[in-house]
Length: 261
Ligand SMILES: O=C(O)c1cccc(C(=O)CC[C@H]2O[C@@H](n3cnc4c(=O)[nH]cnc43)[C@H](O)[C@@H]2O)c1
View 1: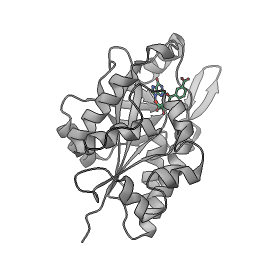
View 2: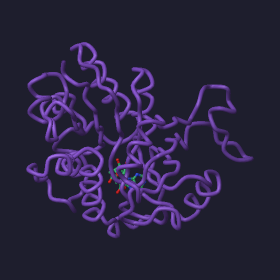
View 3: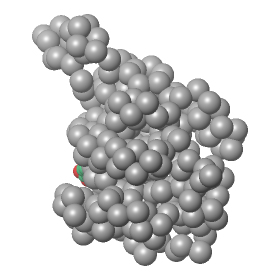
View 4: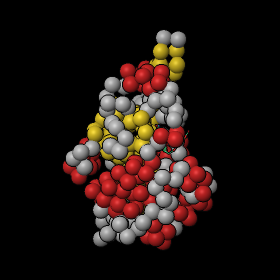
């Protein structure tokens, strides 16, 4: 019997390549670490669903084999599904449903990639594991402050990591910072927003753009979920030139090697 596979979902192909390089060192990333993920995304699995099929674990089981990483080709699939919570949720839900329809459901799904780190909580180059992936902008703004979706009575903005999966990852990555990871559709770009988020989420160590979306797809499919990030930049005033992409991608490769290699 074939062992159930693990699905690792990233936003952009540069992140997927970094993860694959860790799981299977023979697979050198074709997109050099240090390139702009947005530029890379535009040429791969960014917007066109057909491109997702062609370059990741989309529809064709043969394509899954061709892009699967790891010593055991049946063990891990790595797919880039686009930037932001909506693309992450839609792309992940599709991959989970296709696998289920083939009679080969995934055993777990991990949202992986680079992230911004809150100063003093997760520094550039750090590995972060999410205890909870939180949709930080899901709710309503009021003159008296932000109301999370819970207070509006419309469900939950918080997705807990699967306890067993988180325990396995933290045991493989003992130096990882464990804390909440915020999911936002907008990258924070001012000191004011960074301070407000830091105050509203004292347990948050990082922010990214996909974790909660991947978690929603995983929850709908009944599949365990976790989020793994490496820090490329401090959260704060926008200074894209200072993002340490090479360092973050290299940390992502190293983390994938330790967690799944
Ligand atoms: O330069 C920009 O304005 C910009 C806008 C949207 C996306 C990007 C990316 O580079 C996307 C890559 C990926 O990186 C994650 N990420 C990294 N740092 C942060 C951050 O400080 N805040 C939120 N997300 C971050 C995110 O998950 C993206 O998918 C650049």
